Length: 81
Image (cartoon, rainbow, N blue to C red; front, side, top):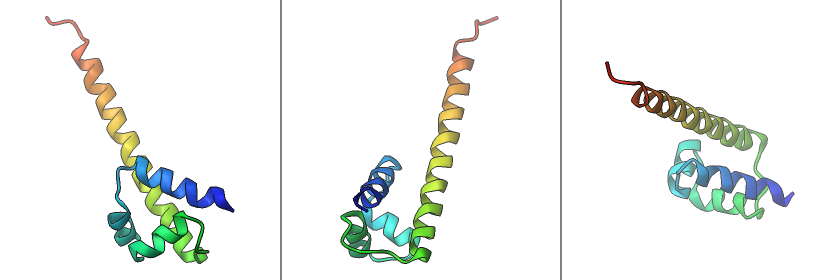
């Protein structure tokens, strides 16, 4: 299932997390995460769950930042009184 590893890597990179930082956050070694991303390792359901949870947290954080940025941008567009 090659798409799984590629998807994990793409989402991790989009979150701005390096390999080592992300691996540490989910409690695995960077080399193991690298092997997962290259589809050379088959992670346990528990590891996959931690990866998914961390990626969801990152996604929610990006969405919150985007919402704040949009709100600030809209405030900048309001006419001065």
